[in-house]
Image (tube, rainbow, N blue to C red):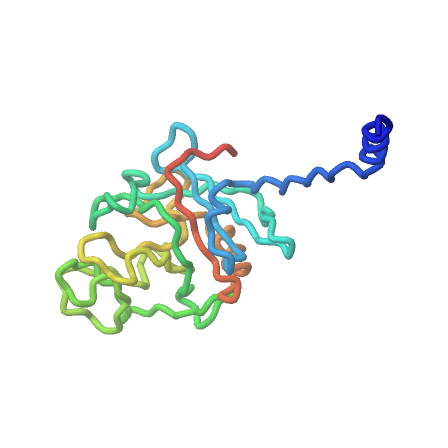
Length: 229
């Protein structure tokens, strides 16, 4: 019996060491880990350090293994004249862009069609977006001049909506006064703010719209935290 303990020790020492699990690679941006599993395309918008209206816009695609890969180089953009605010604080006409995660689409523009895999809607002089919080059509695209106190043309004279996509903020359900007409559209220029939308250079926007696909359930994440890029 006195030899039993040493024998057990030798036998135990012959087993294979437990495998150390390989840690999953970190996502390029932590907000990507909060997105739903069916989302395979994401645009992340973060303020540039020390800036209120200047942001960095990045595009990511989920690989087959589930990891996120950056699709294009980061690009500058602009947001509302009063910066980004929380969705809880967002109000109609405050000049702020609402933080949060939102579905993207449909795309829109002035041409009969554009190069995109999003559902597309053509805008004409007879198309309007209602921003009157008292209107039953608040935060809706309507055809024909609406019976509302305020609205905006979807075919603008400055061509900022020549191409773009709807950011589906405050649309299901629509809450009166919480903000309307939040789009991804052509920017007015570097450092020039929007009324509350996210805007980028037209050539960058063309590239994004070509890439975006309804089947990939795209989301845009508008973050309060600063960009590390």
